Amino acid sequence: MTKFIFVTGGVVSSLGKGITAASLAAILEARGVSVTMTKMDPYINVDPGTMSPFQHGEVFVTEDGAETDLDLGYYERFLRHSKMSKSNNFTSGRIYQNVLNKERRGEYLGGTVQVIPHITDEIKSKIIASGVGYDVAIIEIGGTVGDIESLPFMEAVRQMQVELGRNRAMLMHLTLVPYIASAGETKTKPTQHSVKELRSIGLQPDILICRSEHEISLDNRRKISLFTNVEERAVIMCEDAKSIYQIPRTLYEQDLDDLICERFGLDVPEADLSDWDKVVEAQLNPESTVTVAMVGKYVELPDAYKSINEALLHAGITHKAAVKIDYIDAERLEDDDSLLARLNDADAILVPGGFGERGTMGKMKAITYARENKVPYLGICLGMQLAVIEYARNVLNIDANSSEFDRKTAEPIIGLITEWLDERGELQIRSDDSDLGGTMRLGAQQAELVAGSKLAQIYGATNITERHRHRYEMNNRYIEPLEQAGMTISGYSAKQHLVEAVELADHPWFVAVQFHPEFTSSPRGGHPLFNSFVKAAKNYSASR
Ligand code: GLN
Image (cartoon, rainbow, N blue to C red; front, side, top):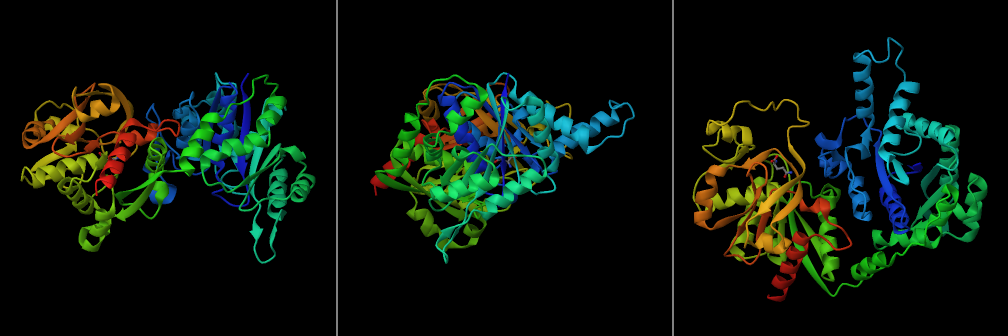
């Protein structure tokens, strides 16, 4: 029978609920417990797919093609044996949509449809379904206690605690214990209030994770325990850490996993966290530093590129190098040549994925720079499409474009597959672009790499599986002229023979891929493509 740990947050947002929950999952996994994780997001959007990265950070894509909250990225990075799927992220919007669809189909037999029980029942059924087949399911509730939006989720948690009983359900609550510099003290009052808020809706936490900048004294720990009714050993301290990969050990050293295993009656061996220790050791003791210039549109909010940042960090860990990321605003690069100095300082250039025309000229300027100056270049998704357009314009000398930016372009080297198949008379139906959700190539797909290509060498394989999230594709009509001019196609999708990757033979490291390798990078080993890219950056740095 699956056991459930519900995770809520209080006082303020951004306490790192996802990281803490995932760290706990990592310890349980290290004890041989099978763990899955689910994120419940209280907002009304049906999924995060159409949300601006400016507001909500990156959209994480699962193997089965769900566009999800970036916390699922943490879950996968901390877990080795569980992959996330469509059933691991739900929003209020999705829950309401399901309930409304049932209502329209007459499934409620004319009854009055209400938050309790219909919405809460739908939430509970999703939570139960997400845990099937696992020993433990960790359910993170987005937002902060007291939010109007999260109330139905909290109510569902309350009901589940009663229904499952103490041996199958626990509640872990994260709070902030602020340090007041002028008084030289840490303060427990916000935590007390946050738990009071929880109690007022019928929830008593079993575990408190106290986030703080400074060490919390034993006295304060006792005080928190007394005022919140949480046993003292379940008041866990979590100071700011240099690396998020230290958190599993921080929790483990306070025996959080023992507490949970006892309560759930799980008779399992001790955790061995030595692989996490190695990750932290390598991250905190780099032997060299490389700088990667990341030229994108959402550079003010690094969370917009969370998985790429992490993948670069992982590759740095693999090569004992600190990877500094210099975020360059693509739009500013368009007409501010002083920014070229920053490209010049970088040991490698990366153009990440993106949507829309804004900033694309700046991104192409960076690509030209990387290509001409033989600086290692990694293009991801839009970063590949732009590498192709840049090459066509500046080497093939054709006025190429993506139909995403110019619907009527005479040379649609990148286009909707429906458009260019249409052109060849192979298309029967046109895709309907009016619904922005669900018209993309999404999720894990197989690609065949060209034997002898740099990419096949990097992966050490010619059959790979990588995740996608894009609407536009390279137009196969241009393969021949591109290859004749010196750009090699190094991979095709197994199913439709769509271009998956390009590279330049007369360049030390210029690789651009249509897929998103960042979603499958792990701190324990990195990802072959990022590992190779950071190695190229190291070589480039050493050669100057
Ligand atoms: N806008 C491009 C497309 O839809 C690239 C998407 C991306 O980079 N994720 O194909």
